[in-house]
Image 1: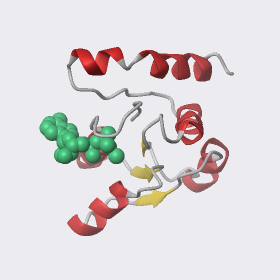
Image 2 (image 1 turned 135 degrees about the horizontal axis):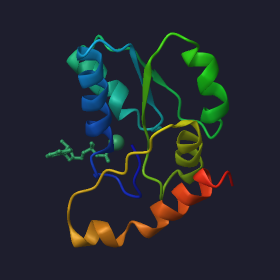
Image 3 (image 1 turned 90 degrees about the vertical axis):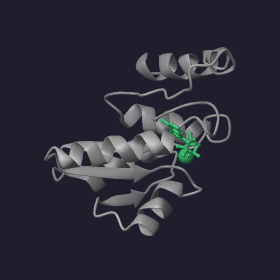
Image 4 (image 1 turned 120 degrees about the horizontal axis):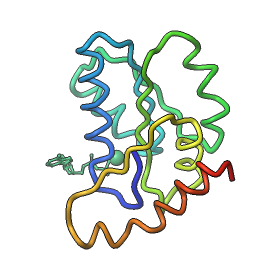
Length: 127
Ligand SMILES: Nc1ncnc2c1ncn2[C@@H]1O[C@H](COP(=O)(O)OP(=O)(O)O)[C@@H](O)[C@H]1O
Ligand SMILES: [Mg+2]
């Protein structure tokens, strides 16, 4: 889950996607790549059974395979706002097979997408 700003539903979407997949029988790991740790905190408060780990690192793409091993069928990564932690978000996108850009359907949010597309292009071009 990726976007430039906070408050664009990254953490909420990550939590719900992870739980929906787990309910359907997939083995799911939620990775909290936001240094604020809001996904992990939510899990503590709500008593999630879903496994979740903190990995707010610019090396995430190198470290994640060792953590995941062959134990999980789906890994959902919650990221910090790209404008604050671009290195972590780029690392998370390098590790990802699917990048979800969450946003409210407003003109203001649409207007803020170009830097996100630029980062997606950088990553998918292998840069
Ligand atoms: N689909 C949604 N519908 C209504 N409110 C939402 C939805 N997704 C997120 N929110 C609310 O928007 C706020 C920001 O969501 P959050 O997931 O924390 O964003 P982010 O992780 O991008 O900062 C929270 O108060 C959350 O409850
Ligand atoms: Mg968040």
